[in-house]
Length: 157
Image 1 (spheres, rainbow, N blue to C red):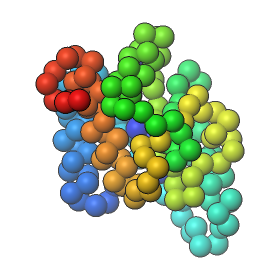
Image 2 (cartoon, rainbow, N blue to C red):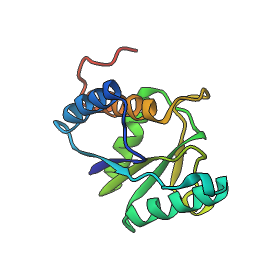
Image 3 (cartoon, rainbow, N blue to C red):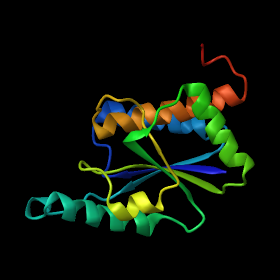
């Protein structure tokens, strides 16, 4: 199974980018992992919030494969412990999922079409974080999940 973290926009903050690169390298020791940074929508000042979500949604949907399992990182999603998250990843693998795609949307969230395509929603917290930080937090959680599944001593309950 391959895990993809799809984002709208690039990670521009240097220390966050370096942290993401570090965890990406660690994850790839266990399984294939890819960060897919979709380009930002240009000229958003002339777009309404709904139009921007629609344009970003079109980009997201065009980057997905028909067989992908899609999980949106969304404030209204299910919250899990790190162990529950590791078990969830394991279940996707057991079901034969080829690509498990987690998506961080743009500043206004996801379009209705993206919600319709999703298999699940996951919330990292009820708090709001900058989207670039979410990328770092989430890559660390994927690495943590890998160590939990392998019984390695990184995670402590």
